[in-house]
Length: 91
Image (cartoon, rainbow, N blue to C red):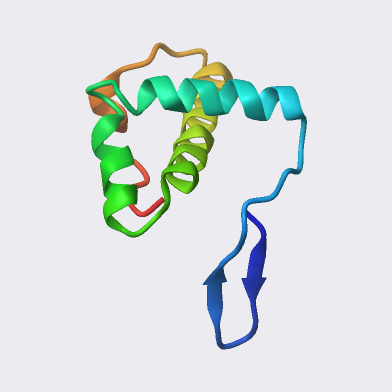
């Protein structure tokens, strides 16, 4: 998303097409699969309830998956679903 904010107002920007197109496509496809899994479906549904469109919710989920994957790679650890359940609730 692009950022659109001034000193007093904050707004949700439009989706941008920055970055590697192939990586965006792969993350988006991963988010579509994850949105149907029991681990990530609650996060996806919360985004939809907050007023995000389906595409926006999938992009947000793709970003979250990328952050989790990077963290796992950086720390050389294994994925534990319960550990990430409440992490970054606001994002």
